Length: 166
Image (cartoon, rainbow, N blue to C red):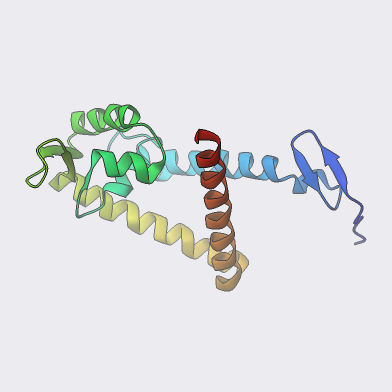
């Protein structure tokens, strides 16, 4: 298969090959869409119908040790209001509980309930199995490289957002 290495500019980015299948924004869009569908089918609807894929990043970031609402918002680069809204939804389905911080009266700490902890372990197992499928598909080394690249891209965009805010 011959590859055209000429640079092709597009409305949504640049690709060196001119191959529309390799446009970064399209690939990220498709991967996110497929991940959202996989999350809904395999994680969210299985045991808790009120749990949806928008809850996943926040829920998994609380973890088994708990976190303050402020730390959670900062960790996910969202507003405290956005985390509070999702926390209320998770509290309504008995996945998360909030408590006043014992060290800072102004802070609210978030913890998984016993049901939340069970579901957290279930989700970790399912995500681990998907990760293993990815590693079989592309090889463990390529998978780790892909993760490293995504981390660098996220960091790049976080830095760009910080520069724009200042």
